[in-house]
Image: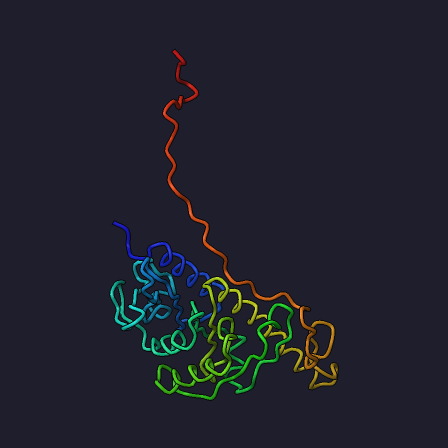
Amino acid sequence: MRMMFETERADLAHTVQKMFDRKNTNVAGGNMSIKVFDKDGHPFILMTPTMMSETYYSELHPAQILVIDGNTYKKIDGVGDVTREVNMHERAYLTHPGIRCVYHSHAENSMFWATSGLDMPNLTEATRELGEIKNLPFAPATSEELADVVKNALSNIGDKAMENVFLLNSHGVLITSTDLHVAARILETLEWNAKIAYQQTIFKKIGILNELQSCGQDANTPMKPGTLASIPLPGDDVKSYPKEFPTNFKRPNESKY
């Protein structure tokens, strides 16, 4: 018998491990979830368990990915306990129906901007489409206050919440997206941008640059519509279906007579 959402849980476990190995979070924590639906349209949240990084170094078996009812937020399957930050994921999913992945990490270079309390300058071509990278007001980790800060910030940006990143002051990064792999891509490119933004800020401070630079111009100059390629939404899944074998099939070493 196969597990509930076995394919999706295996994909999430694999992605989380890759993100940890690439230092896009640290042993102090981080969590990731995706929203899926059964054939009747009932929502479920597939989520990494608490102590994912501290205990398991993000090397999770698909059975450790928790299945949480998307209406009651009660755990119905999976080995492990629900993280205390489930409230932040819950608020995000309730904010916009197009959010299908919530990714919180402690990525090193982005954490620098988060702890500074500053918005991160958005400079690279791969991130400019995301717009402003805002630093949200501080609220303690796992608190209802932080969950509400996230909910209010997402509510204020409308459909942009489907592909967005916020810095959580002194706590890390929160990405909302339409797809697990889009979220991973956003964080990977965000990390490069965070490092480049730091270096350009130093150059500006010591007088090598007059202004931060992006896409061949000052970073504060608005981009012309259509200049940048948008982050693609995921398409329809391509699935395989069983097909009968031919009844007259002969192996090469079999006689025809």
